[in-house]
View (cartoon, rainbow, N blue to C red):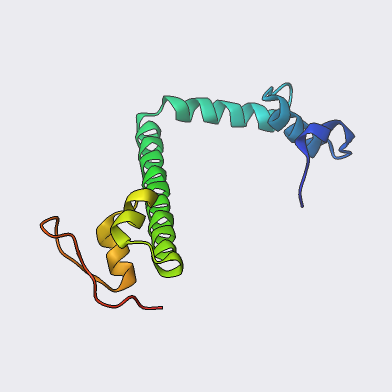
Length: 124
C-alpha cells in the first residue's frame, strides 16, 4: 500500500492520518506514536555509537557509488574501443576509467607506463 503524505487530511484512519501528518510536517503534535518516534530519533542522534555507524554507512555508500561510476566508465571505454575502434588508452582517458581495467575487460595485456599498451586481439 502506498500513501501520499501530503494528502494526510483525507485519510479516514486516525492513526494513519496522524502518522502521515507527522511524516509530512515533521510535527509530532498530540499523537503518542509520533512523539515516541521523535524522542527515539533525538536519542539516537545523541548516541556516539549511532553517529559512528551512520558515518561508516555514509562512507560505505560513497564507496559503492565510486565503484559504480568506475564500472560505468570502464564499460563506456570498452564500447568506444569495440564499436568505434578508439585506441584503448584514449578511450580510458576520455571516460576517466583506469586503463588497466579497460585493458582487462578487453582481454588485452597491459604493461605499466614504460611502453603503454600491448595489443593482442580485441574480442568482439
